[in-house]
Image 1 (cartoon, rainbow, N blue to C red):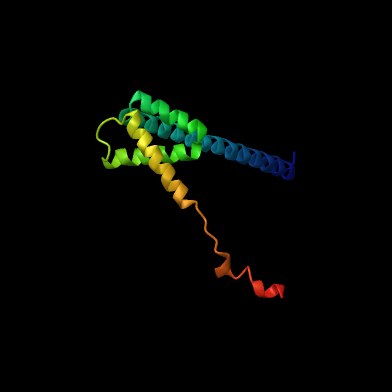
Image 2 (cartoon, helix red, strand yellow):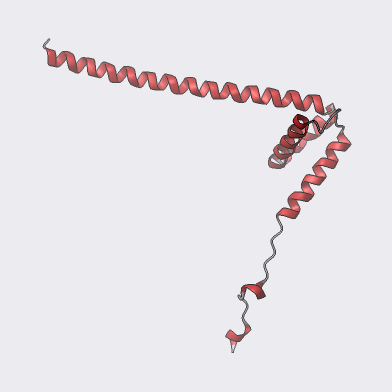
Amino acid sequence: MDDAELEEIRAKRLTQLQSEFKNESGAGNQKAVEERKREQDEMKNTILTQILTQSARARLNTFMIGKPDKGRLVENMLLQMARTGQIMGKLGESELINILEKVSEQMQRSTTVKFDRRRAALDDSDDDL
């Protein structure tokens, strides 16, 4: 073997090792992200178990199945309230229902759209003449 062939083999092996290293580090990073997400889910479930009664937790889980976006919003709201000390004892099912109703009212108010055609000048009766 001459030096040119040896250099070519070394270069190929180096690129192969570098690509393997990139693949391994990507997989390790993904595992770390999954582990972190799992730990956050466990912590969230622990806090919710501490602040909600069993019937309230079941109600929230049922609500999450039907309306996942609102359910996550309520979950995050409960977690924030627990962290700031606004919830001292366990919330029962009736208190959770009140919170769910308030969130639904707020979401309905925020999604109403009013459009006044007269102000937008889209309905001009002078064009018909």
